[in-house]
Image (cartoon, rainbow, N blue to C red; front, side):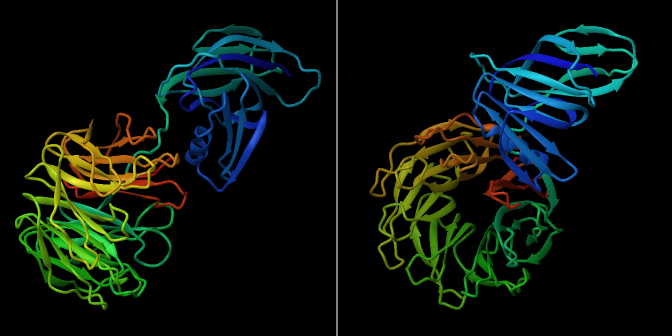
Length: 511
């Protein structure tokens, strides 16, 4: 049998690229991990994480086994038999420098050895090389070029033809899977509501006056929505155990109804009819956190039309006292509740849409709050998240500004006050922001729902609380809310988006 040696020069150790489809692979190199019962995408992503000069994988689809190889030198030998699975390398382009045929010393079924060489200079790219292989029997000739390779041998030998095309490499998140929900979904929350240790999707549908519950089927896919009627035009939803029975309950802000609704969980992911509590005019956003240190979660609501926030303390049985209100800026559209001054008391942070500010109301210690301190942000701030983004153990403020198509970061000075904003351009009309580490480097990244661009943007954290330009992923029409949670139990955060214009939620699994 004839062996083929391909000597390849590889450029740009940046993204994974498909080199060829082959079968019964034997890779001569250092195997550093074997993963069982994993998808091919998961195998590829595990390989991408390695930063050695060359990495490769061998994936067996029949038993979902992934073998990962690495080399920190400039070359690696890959030996395989023809016709089947896939090898990927962390390079973005290849050129064939030389091709040889030679007779091995021992006879066996036809193996192929590839010598892969990585140059010292690299340049980033997101493209991928994919190749397919076919085999015939014919007379002996040999030809080669930089884009395709053909070798022909005698009637007892193998002919191999390889063609290349450019595709897009996996870059953190796969294409969306969509699920139908109610009309005009405006808010999404992710929590395990049926105690099976799999996070489920809960959506507030303002156009149909419902909340939809989509139970997790176990692999990051979801069952059809079960809908529950709530008050007038629910704009926001939170999912928290409010009656201390270890079952997650639903809390909604009913914008037109001027109420918050509480739907208690019966224990199997089914919910009772809502109980409503009067709040201010046009409640837009709701958070559920223990603000008075009694181990019972309380409700905090941003009342858009009243220019205040309302606090409803929990009585202890999942019912709530009447609200206490605190004046904030014009048109509060979003609220978060986080301890920002390290006193172990949860403070209120509110995005004032009409004022172009965020307000910080420090907790006095008994569930009452000081007057707000305001900080200028962009035009029409629509969403706020509060997370430590620069690893100093002080939570920082991140705001999505729908009017200026930006996200801004305000770093915490350490005593609950904040520095001036740093601004990052994103897509058109961002309506929601989440801050989660999506690339496993222990630095929280920004994920934003770009309402006018029909995509989500991911801004990776550089490590000092500054962020790279966004990478975008297509979702449905006019995405209005985003959550980032591991929904398929692979220890990687996934993106879930509520698409206002499509009446769907999108799930983008981490690759």
